[in-house]
Length: 160
Image 1 (cartoon, helix red, strand yellow):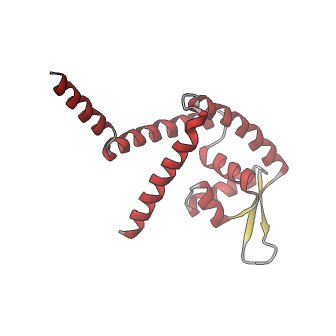
Image 2 (tube, rainbow, N blue to C red):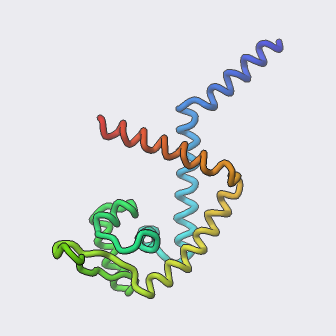
Image 3 (cartoon, rainbow, N blue to C red):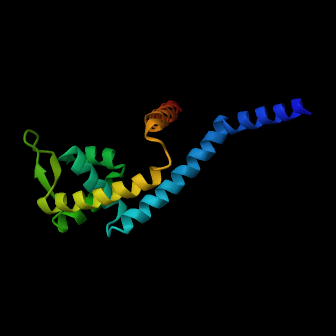
């Protein structure tokens, strides 16, 4: 009887650490986090895409539209509309590139910097509250594991 219990525990441990089981946990965690972040950002009175653009500019500085698309994870058509919206609210400016007349950079205005600094501070507190259950000592390992998974998936997707 002890042997069948040991086999059952071993099988359960193996199935809970399988790639498929890990994918399910990862997908559910992502869905939950995405929902949480959307609600958290909405409660700050701004849309998610606008927040992502302002946050990218806060942390990366002035960026071209294509670089901003990559950093903020938005498609080009969505980016143009969002930057237009943020520019109309005097939160960002399009400025000519210093050496390439074909390119414009998007940068924060004083008002934009002030707003996103305040919003990001609250967002960071909200995220910290969710992540409180993950020990600080474990976070680097979790980050590296997630990065490894993402890069492997990206590489395999581009091969096919």
